[in-house]
Amino acid sequence: MQKKKLVVLTGAGISAESGLAVFRGSNGLWGKYRVDDVATIEGWYRNPELVLQFYNERRKELLKSYPHYGHEGLVDLEDVYDVRVITQNVDDLHERAGSSNVLHLHGRLMWVRSEKNENLRFELPADNCEIHVGDIASDGAQLRPDIVWFGEAVPMLDAAIDWVEEADIFVVIGTSLNVYPAAGLLHYVKRGVPVFLIDPNPVKDPYGKVTTYINCVASEGVKQLVELLSKEY
Image 1 (tube, helix red, strand yellow):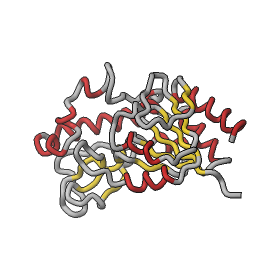
Image 2 (cartoon, rainbow, N blue to C red):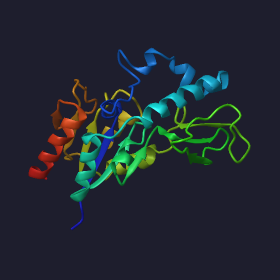
Image 3 (spheres, helix red, strand yellow):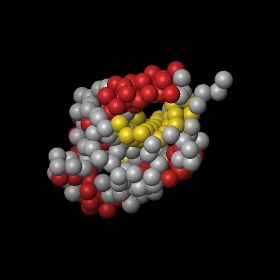
Image 4 (cartoon, one colour):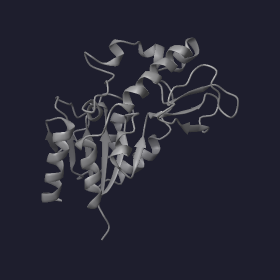
């Protein structure tokens, strides 16, 4: 019997419980750094040293963090469902938890690429995860973070839409649904598909698709989700 497709969209809220700093909110990174300085191609051209320092710090922070049940529970669901995770996050916590199918909309923090060729990329080792001005790719171009910055195209968006359109169950975890184009993925959920939203804060559903709200943090919310799915689906 073919497994039902369970498609999950995750945002910063699922990583916050692992100790990673979120970008938005009163204590978010955007309160300490200007978006234009560290997350745009213009900022990169103005001051690559600052951009590289910012992401070097993010990698060090990531290496001190670990997945929690919000990540691990999605892995448990693979026993019953074809689970596919679309994440807005650039960390690797889903992979470290053991998820089999993860699509990163906004790039991957532990990866770097040539600034001239986006297809020339590689993963940094945990024991040597910093890059600096003068570190070059095999094509001779400066290495940059393999991150989709504001204003850049989201290369994995079409693949994500395909997954959402095939979903038998759709789950949103830890995202405000304010960041586009990721928030727009909810639009592609087919009529009649159950949609669960897990978040401790009120989240406005722009498309009227959410059928079940679970108002708690990701680790507890995924626990409730697993229980609900085991009973009803």
